Image (cartoon, rainbow over all chains, first blue to last red; front, side, top):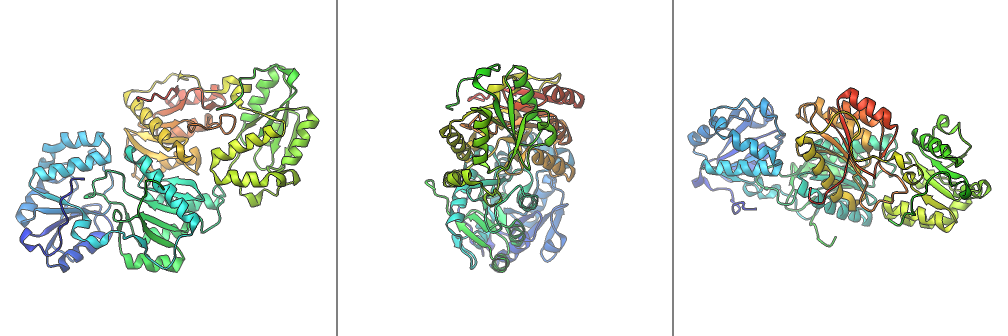
Length: 294
Length: 294
């Protein structure tokens, strides 16, 4: 991707960092990390997605998702140039957006982008922001330690069967990648048990639990791996795949052996809590590097 | 595939046709079609899968799934050489099978086959049957008119958006095919909404209905297509993808525009009823030919 070079914290000369906050706790964690380096942050909390408790400790503004004009005005007023987009922002229906005037100006581009699938949409939005003088950064560029490292995060390690499941999952996700789908799949004993599309990872894992209960999946508990990786060519500045403590809980309920994520390409929210829960449940959580020959 | 040439009905000289009956009404429909051509049938009803009401009108034996020895003995006694396998037979857990002595003999081959995924399993079973003097046929070889033809089955036709969704779905299924997964997917407005794995088509469609309800899928009703096609290289003598009246009902509940299946490669159970329900619900149902260039 054409993402700019990493931007270490402490760059006060570059002005405050704007954080567009979707759902979850991750926007607050990243804001705290950035502020700890000495760089101020301004949170742009998206109505209906951001958690008020998460943005409250920081300087912040509330915005509707389509309030692009208002957003640009506030960015200039706050002296922000750099921005990151953090947290869950589900694909909205265009008619629910109630765009402001700044948005109306760019609607034709948004509509064209929507037609081309998610990746295309995100790339278009990134280009639009840059045309308007902003610089879109990836969360990992402002807080590099949020990305999954390589190897096991906790005490448990995968066995050979898990390794084979992980390799199959990574190859499947790579094959599905051109279709703008499939950041996650569940593979058990070399069989693909579930593929994520519109439902998201949590619902996919709940399905595994349910299919085990009704006997449609007959693998014993402790067999099967959640595999998570970004789409090939995905714009890393937007919408990186993420796991967190809730993912570990869902993996445990699904009766899997553990979770494997692409090292350096998946965000791990609340990593200490991820390790604590994985260890408590006897699951592995690890970062892996995809190998073409796998 | 190395499937034998089509075997028209009426081949009384070849002895009765053995039908291994899984779940659903299709085994009975096919038995009736074959008997109507003058060839007798013997049903081998699999305990726990076959419906007693479906096999009752025909000469039949009940068998456990792993009773391979008993099955071979009955095949010889009945003078059968040709067999077809019809209806749902979910992947069983080996420990649930309680194999008989004839099965124990072949267990190492079954275990090896299980390790290699479904296709490998089915191919191995086919070879095993042939080693034991049987001839495994595809349902379409004994009852050719059960396969989907090309074009619309009922009154409704797809619009351009549906055609694009169908083309994307066929390409996705082809890409996933090497992973022994994905006989079906749902595509809406060029986005992949769901991919079928262990849950089966009905549960996948129920998921679409649910995701619409909770607002996770925001497409209007009447947008989206269920696309169904066999895996590339799938042994057509086993486990062909099937649609029937229940599929149409589930497509309607999912709020889709219709269903597209690979012409000549997907079984349509109770076709008149499929057309009646599709027309009543305003859905299209059609057979399509995958084009490489689509």
